[in-house]
Image (cartoon, rainbow, N blue to C red; front, side, top):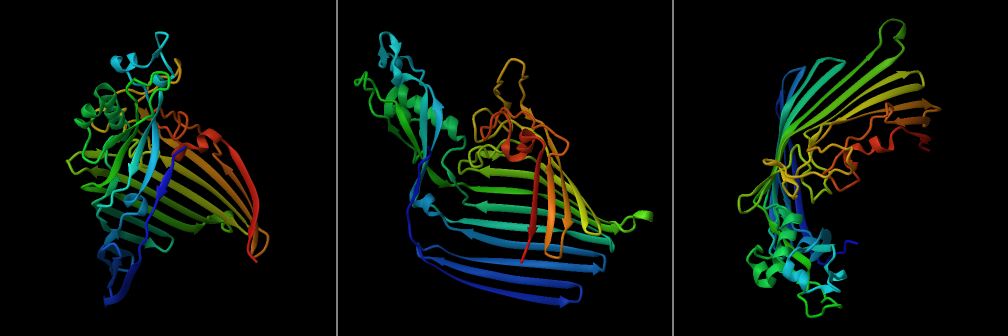
Length: 412
């Protein structure tokens, strides 16, 4: 189990305003702001500006700029969250102290090393900066195209005090077992401590094993991401004898260009296109491309919608984990059996879902869904731990394979 606790109290005062100013016929500006004051002494003003410029009827240019503000949570200032990673102490001198009949006793076997992310009362609030810009183009009444560039940055980003949590904790624990607290202190960053396990009941004079590595939260330098959102919408009636059929087509795609975390010492974790952030999101990772395309055909009371989903492949490495990095590549990957080849890359995943709907009345309709219609299988992912040899965040349907759902939906 992973014990979690948090404690705290606060009161908040806030004020908000918004002004919409159609400066000229083709230019509209919206300005808003919010001021927050917290009883802990945190205060911040968060502005937002949105601009829409329409040089001619078919084209709009949109842009927004805003600042955000997040105070540390109670768990981050006065709480703890303990997770576990397996460890086996290899130091010969330590092992010699924990033997029974010439063999390592139960105390010296593989066990779960606790990693306690403890609260830090000295944390500063996060300050976010957000920017988006892009065009919306409507060349005809039945087609709309849009594109947008986004940039999001958080300064003083709150994160656990370790750039590669599992491996760092194991290294610190190994140093503790080898030379005791003095040796561990030589490798421990400021604010990190080790709590030992109870003594070995079979060999009580032996040095205790490290039980929990206590890593507090810190304010990192910053975390930032940028990329593009693309979409289109088309709607028309089919030609000829199919003119009673209305067709609606929608497509959306997101490209993640960068997703980087910068620590106070200058260390940079690069997550885009990898399994990172490994610890924060249970190793689901950050594929660079995600897209979907749906086509709805409407005829009288019937509608039919096939939808195509795509998630790009990614490298089986993560800068906040120990099996490799975004710059050096895989140091190792796990192969479950001899007939499965070693891989440092997880392939892309495709999925096609189908929805059929029949309108019984104005308020009620029958529906049937077919998930993973074409039976695409989940690609092997040897780096994740969120599921066994596949990534449940992106490819769950590829393990369940084809499935069905029927029902009735409506309102009174």
